Image 1 (tube, one colour):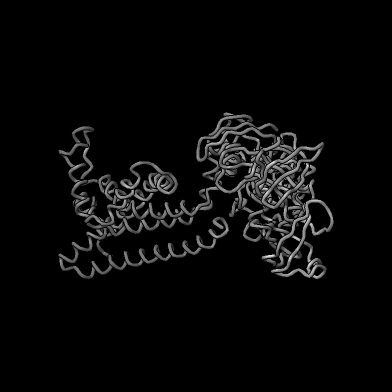
Image 2 (cartoon, each protein chain N blue to C red):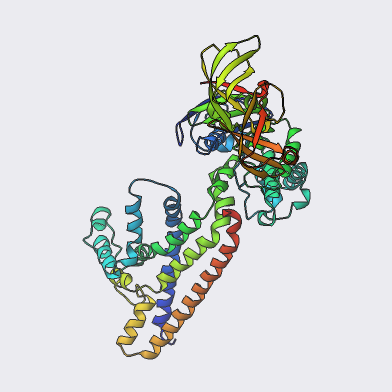
Length: 226
Length: 334
């Protein structure tokens, strides 16, 4: 804990995880809704694509992202900015990598929502805004929150993608998991143990929260899916 | 209220009917009853009058799906207050309580839906639908989610309360009991609207074989018109020669279907249309006795008060004579 770089790294890790979770919420809620309730051609392809990060080696995902976001990549050539080895690059990688975790939670939450509730709410005079704010979100929030927490926890411990896209620049793009690896490489087992302990504690707390939310969720749902 | 609607999806349906008092949309599942209600509520695309072009949230309808769709996270009164968002906040609760009172369940205001029985949930859902100040109530299978043993009592009470409100009710159902309480009945089949009229008309004089089966005619057999009298027709049927009330369309030589309700097969002696047969099945159904009388090759379903069993010594395999009263024989063009 005496290493100032550790605190910088921990802070960066939390920042990346928070921003990633926020973006996943904006991106994942509509996507989760579409996957839960809409049918369209190519749906299976889309579902497979968003699940791909679960099976793909993180280095492969990171490698493609590096090509895409790097100095000579298509983004740099078209728009003139480079996100590789920067905070933004870490976030893009994390969003893609944690998408399946968030999406699964959102989709299950939406899938178990009785669509009669939404239709009835509309016949009762509620426009889409009220339907979302007063019906969908209040009923599905435990599922949404648990999906978000899982995505957050998953981002905290990310290694391969952030190593490839971020390059592990201490204080700039180094995340805790890579810090631990570096400490072990440098035979600094004490520092590695401390950092590992922090991640273990945080992760357990988060997963415990998710389990609690699942129980809350189970208590709520019987009355609406009967 | 006059309704003229055309749907393409999920079923192709084009119909015109009048909703007044309690109007029942009778039909088997899959013929589009629910779809028609949803179309009227603006939940699936359709064209027609009324409400055409209005989005669901703008239509003055009270829509009740089969399981009532109460919001599980809101108390009963909050559910009822949901359509009252146009009122200032302090005015919503008293207004919601008024509607609960109207349905006779003001004391349940603080309960959550999971703490209510099926019948209570239905009343909350109705109070909520009424708070919308609808021009028509659309009820999807209103008796199906109720406990079978008490549903007539439970829904009968609901109907009493709704009667005073002067709001037409259109209820989709395949429940005979509900259909019999209706003012008007519209029978929907896969081919579309088969018959529409007063309950008495549809139940007493079904226009087609399919409608006859739907409204509870278990006995339907073929025959031919032999002769016409002033208000009677003489028929040759698979049950033997019979007389029936003369419908204005009947012609000599015409093929017809002859129908009679099980409960209108009487065991009277020495009257017209006597038919003799052998009792095949006999079993009690509630407080009545149901059986099948085999006459030639036709089985005649009957429903008798149970005291008849002792009186007539009814048993399977025994001979029995029944009388089919001419005015209860219903003819359908074949």
